[in-house]
Length: 120
Image 1 (cartoon, rainbow, N blue to C red):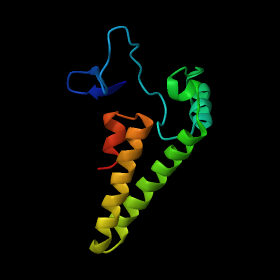
Image 2: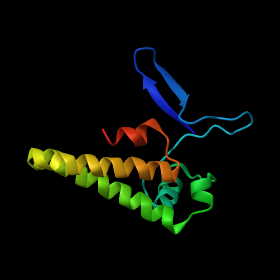
Image 3: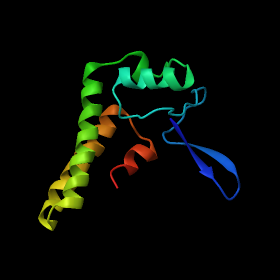
Image 4: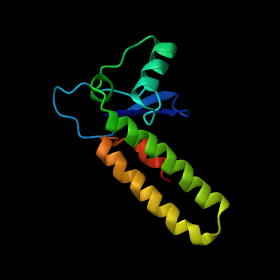
């Protein structure tokens, strides 16, 4: 529900809400690639930080969630190729793919600015 950014000029780490936070909610930051499947996220977190995540997405994994996240990765790659390597006529197709990606972000509850900026 939060994200971080580095302000090099002020030499400060800024944390800001990426979703509405209710009183009493725990503030959480992503420590790994949000689009990776559950098992891959768990492995990376353990290998790098020696932590086990207990967020809703990691503690009660749903196979459909992993499938959506893999689909999101593929959509981003295909859209990038369509924009970079194809004639202008494929831009419309790429935009459709990015709209599908943003719809999947909503389904997954990925409201972070960084996840949505992937579409730009």
